[in-house]
Image (cartoon, rainbow, N blue to C red; front, side):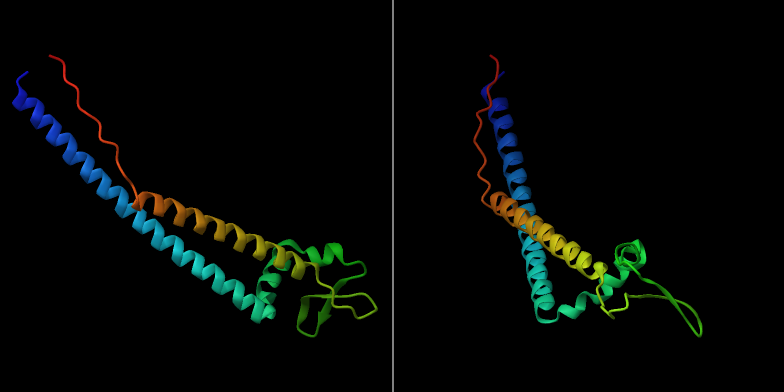
Length: 145
């Protein structure tokens, strides 16, 4: 092979490495933006739940509807009938206690979900930062004579 072909192949390889390096950096910027946005959303939701803990009530109702855990774990509870028919609201023990296991289960699910999503956002930020700082190794193209 003559030296002109070797130089042409080396130039092509260098160009492809530059293009791939640029694509890796662009993917890194995208991951950084998505990770930061997700992290900010998680912090905002955690702050909203701190300021307004009653906001979990709707999620607790969804947990109760899906699992019927209040009926299962609350002794002496049954459903009360209203004038319009059956009600899904459980009647609690004679003490009038409004203990709802679904409320506590909803808090556990939401807190673990926020922790998981926050961790995923952290990984996206970390990986995006590593890709943005991507430094390719220069590999010499060896040819056979």
